[in-house]
Length: 251
Image (cartoon, rainbow, N blue to C red):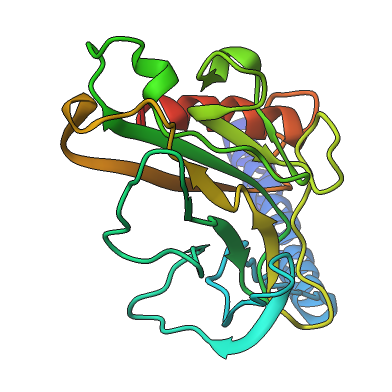
């Protein structure tokens, strides 16, 4: 048999190379397949679900104790009527008589499961005409109880005498300090601030012609969760700033 030509020998060599490449490729595929199988066999997964909650400021379940207004009493509240603000001694349509006092005792409470909170009260006084002669001196006023303070001198108004307030923004301080205090439920019971004031004084110099039509003193409360620091140095500072902004909507 005659010898192969140069061209035939080249073709034979190329065929051998192709076979070798095919065998190598097949081996690589086997290795990869084995690797995938190994990874799947040794794999592990885990899922962790973290449930979040939000804070709450609930309405108190009981009214304040009439004899100790900074403590919860035993009378249940009516959710359809009662909120956070109570005035246990107020009588509707109380008559103003110059030189006398009227029982009015705003007190703020939060429910037993509520977050600790800072509490503020804004008092709006729309009783005497602003254009009346010596209007402030004739305007009904109140004096604060020991667990409340003005937020700042520029946030309240007096009748010209120290401590005789006619309107403004006040904060619960608990022990009479100059900073807001946290109101915190304890022992599974509602918590109360105690009364902002207990009576309204009607000046002796007030007369019928000084009074507006439909005279009213409006008391509103602002309750701020005590864990809300925001971008302030602390939560109390943030609460003060937020309360001041809120008060602008009440004036």
